[in-house]
Length: 90
Image 1 (cartoon, one colour):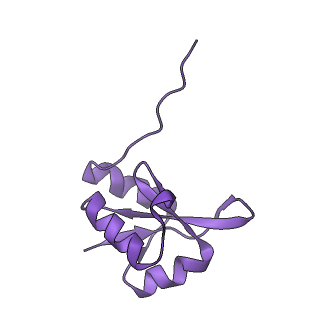
Image 2 (cartoon, rainbow, N blue to C red):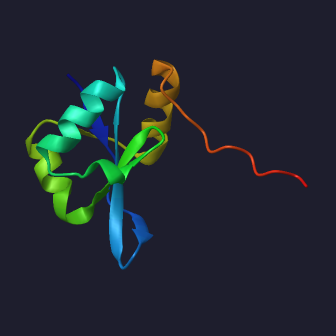
């Protein structure tokens, strides 16, 4: 089981956030996220948004630290990337 996490450099809601992904399956990702206490609502299309306060726990439980560009590369290579839908051009 390998999951990846990028550094908490994404601002939002008064906190900094990381992205947690799997290069194997969403089932693996959901199971790992539950282990570090991420609620299901933190899942967004193909990743979990993880607050900086949970970053260290994720790494200690086995998440591999990578940069944000590597997160995207891993998702694409695994066929797990789900892009945001394009806005309607009406």
